[in-house]
Length: 430
Image 1 (cartoon, rainbow, N blue to C red):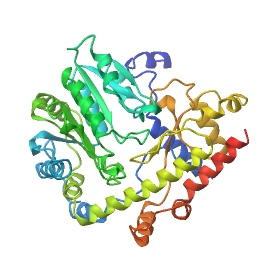
Image 2 (cartoon, rainbow, N blue to C red; image 1 turned 90 degrees about the vertical axis):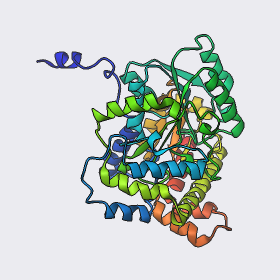
Image 3 (cartoon, rainbow, N blue to C red; image 1 turned 120 degrees about the horizontal axis):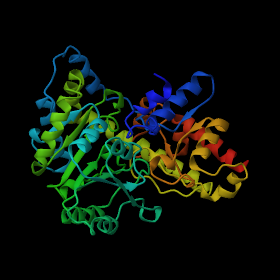
Image 4 (spheres, rainbow, N blue to C red; image 1 turned 120 degrees about the vertical axis):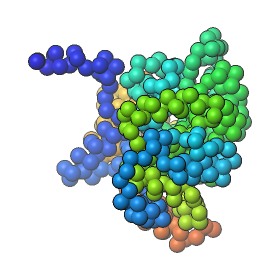
């Protein structure tokens, strides 16, 4: 069989889709690094912090667990997550309302497979939401946001897309604190969105994987305001530093039990169950306690200081961006340099990122990976290229009453400080 015949047999929904942008940039960064080039890994959004030792110890103790677990997940873990939701978000859910998967990414995919409806995504959004819908042949509607409203979806924009066909099945994804912007919603914004979602009977997936990284520790789930229609997505990858452990959870209201059961059917025919040792260890993560509370408080403190440092440095470069409120991302707009970039035939966010990587070793992602047209000169920076363990220890030694200033960043996050210096010099040299 020739190559053309091989290609023609590939599912049309798959053809033309590239591997995940975040994974591509990470693999490219590692390749360039292995070739001896100095690389500043600001592309992949992987938590720099270690998994809390009490959780690692729990994994050691359960490494022998080898049996298949229930498709929905280990009941003790589901109970632990239900208690976590009650303790942290004051939301009442039962263990039976939760499904565990090998990462929230997989759960999102099978949810879209189980529910036949359009996907509504605020622009910008995480890189995998839309490609997953495309793989399944679903329609995607991008909902506009802008820096003037902190990159948040407004209730009016949501109402506008729904009003002409009010009974159409729809899934809306809200991700906050946001990947890629670092911004989050106020209580009033969540209330207004909840009102519109209820009006149109929207299934709302609230992707709260970064909830525990909100710098002020005051994350609130929209499920408080739209409990009957909201599925909460969470996991271990961001707040617990365990991305490679691949454990996610969807938390359902009882009103959406049929969707949860449909997802379980698909799970039984696909991934079967999530890794047993990881599920046992995750129980300890969601139980919380003083050690994990301290870990979260210190990691938030470090991220908040880094976010402020980057916001200040980029603003001084005439780069427009919103001050981050959680997570480890900023979404800077380099439009100030458009004419200078054009002189070097840099006309798109992708060419900007490629050229910056080639010239300086700084890896970041273009806005075109997050739903924007190619000519939008915005990128996503993930400020994660530092030793998280050392930064936590240094912050703890300073004490909570002392601000983590620029000298702390330069000493404990030197690659990020150096990357910004190199970036500034590169733009000045255009």
